[in-house]
Image (tube, rainbow, N blue to C red):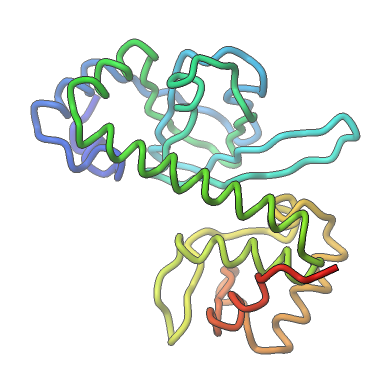
Length: 228
């Protein structure tokens, strides 16, 4: 595997050259077409993945054919590590949203990397902690907020993946209305009403297909739980 490719991956670019060469020997690349399943919930997990190119959706489906998208992952993001660390089955499903190339690391090699490099272990722990915090926020979002608060909470959670732009925050990823609805856990119609309300209040806007958070503070204020 090309070392230049590994250096472009945020998860690995802080490692010394010797460790990168080791990973290049251990890892392999695998291509997935748009719509192709990478793994499904409840199957055993023997590999972790790093997005090299493309886009991946992490999601779950209920028996009532409802779906909840937990995240959309872009180049540099990793996933599938939980089943390798705790030994349980996959907690969610993963699917390529567009043609994607992934770096694949086997369970035995992954554990060896963690044992040999404390920096890598710390980075993994920090990322898992951030995801746990985000999961707690999503639970609060579903239990205590009305639809406007839920949509605001989801957008607010995506701010950390955005960049400063014209006094606000431009979200990094492009989301269709259906994709955002799946993240909120709703359908397109109530989502559309909430988005229209936020745009009229000049809290958010659109910029070339990306959500632009014009007023991050007001958006954050809408995320507080609403008493019943």
